Length: 281
Length: 328
Image 1 (cartoon, each protein chain N blue to C red):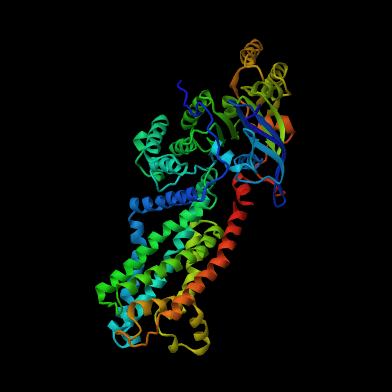
Image 2 (image 1 turned 90 degrees about the horizontal axis):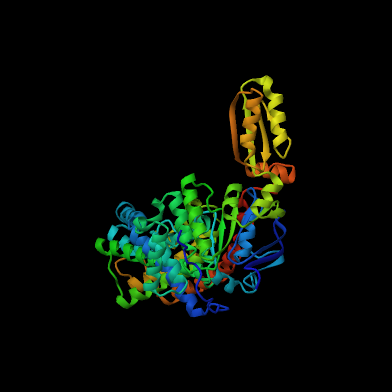
C-alpha cells in the first residue's frame, strides 16, 4: 500500500489575508473557466445566437415594411435597439452559471479555498462579458450583412460597444440576484425572461416612442432599455437621420442617462445580491 | 498544539431547527474521526462550520490552533473539503477541474499541470483526464472530487459522506484511497450514515443525533456498547421458535427480537455463530436462514437512544442534509 503524500515536509507560513491583486488574479482564473466551457461546447454560443438572428430577420423583413414603410429604413432604426435588447438577455447567463455553481456545490468548494471572498462572483460576472461582447458582434454582423450602415465612424461604434458592455456589467447584478433567488438553473430561464420581456418590448427598440399612447410613453421614456437604445442609435447613426424614417437625437443626453441608470442599478442590486447570497450560503 | 481540530459547544440554528446543539469534538493529528448519524443529524452543518463555510451561533472551533471564524483564511489554507454532492464543474474535463483549483491556489501553471497529472494517476483517472466530467460515473466523480480537495496538499481533510450513493465496488475503492491518505499523515474528519464505513476508517467515532453527540469512543468501545453485529436465525419449523429464541438469547448480549419466524439479536463476538450452530444442531433444529451481519445504523441507534434513526421528523426539525444547507 503506497501512501498518498498529502502533507508537506514543513508547514509553510500561512498568510492572514488575500491581497487585492491576488483577488483579481483569482477572478480572472475563474473567468477562464467560462471561456473553456464555451470552447468545449461551442454550441452554447449557437444556442443564444439563433434567437437574435431570427429576430433580426423577422422584424426586418416581416414587420419592417409595415412599421416603417421600407425594411431598409427600419433596419437602420431597429438594429441598435436589437443589439441592446439581445445583450440584456445574454446577461441572464450570469444568473444561470451562478445558480448552477450554487446548486451543484461548486460554490462551496470555491469558498473553502483560501481565495478572495468576492472572487467567485467577480469571476462569474467578468467571464460573461465575453458572451455579451459576442452577442453585440453577432447582431451587428448580421445587420451589416443585411445592409445596416454606420452613419458615424469607427470611434462612435467603439464608444457604443464600450457603453453597452459597461451597462451589461452593471446590469449583471440584477442577474446575480436572479441566480441567487432561483431554486434551480431551469427556473432562472423562466424567472429572467419573464422579467426581461416586458421591459425590453415596452421600449423604443422596435418602434419610436411617439407612436404609443401617452400613458405608455411616460414609461418608455424612462425605461433604461429605450435610453440605452437611443444612445446606441446616436453613436452608430449620428445626429442626423441616416436612412431611418425617424429622427435620431444627439448622443450626449442618452449616454449620460444610461450611465446614471447603470450606476443606480449597481447601487440597488449589488448590496441586495450580496445580502441574498450571504443568506443563502 | 495537541489537536488538529478542536471544537467546544458549537451551536447552529436554522430558523426553528437546531442543527447543532452544543457539539464538542477533538481530533488528534493524523487520525480519523468518524461522525456517524442519520440524515439531518447535523453532520454536514458541523463540517461546514469547521470548513469556515458557516459561522456558528455559539461555541468556538479551531483548526491547528486557528480560529474558524477569526482566522478563516488561515484555516482555508490547511483544509481540503469533499462535499456530499460531488462538487466538480461538470462542463470541464478532469484535468481542467484540477488545474482550476491549482491556479486558484496560486500554483504556477506548469506545476499545477504536473500536480493535476499526479493526482489523476493516483486516482486512476488518467484515461478520463481529457473528458468532460459530466460523462464520469458516480465513483469517478467522487474520486475527482477527492482529488480536487488534495491539490493544495492539505494537512486536514473533511469528507462529508464520501461514499453515499456509490456501489459497493466504488465504495471499497474510495475507502482504499482514504486509507492511503491517512497512512500519508493526513488528518481526516469523516461523516457517514454507515456504521461499517466508520468502523473501517475511523480511529474514533462520534454518534450524533439532532445536533447532539449521543455516544463516542473507538469503534471497539462503541461496538462493545451497542453490539456491532446482528445475528439472524430462522427455524424451518415454527415449533422450534422457543428453542431458537432461548439459544440466541443465551449467547447474545441483548434480548432477541422475534418477527414472524425470524429471530434477531445484537452480538459483539463473532464466535457466537459456530456456537449457535452447534447448539441448534444438538437440539435437532433445522434452520432455513442463519446470518451474522454488521448492525445497521438503525440498530445502533435503537440501542443508544431507544428510538430508531428518523429520516424525517414530524416536527420538521429534521430533514436531509440538503435542506439543512438551504434552510439558512
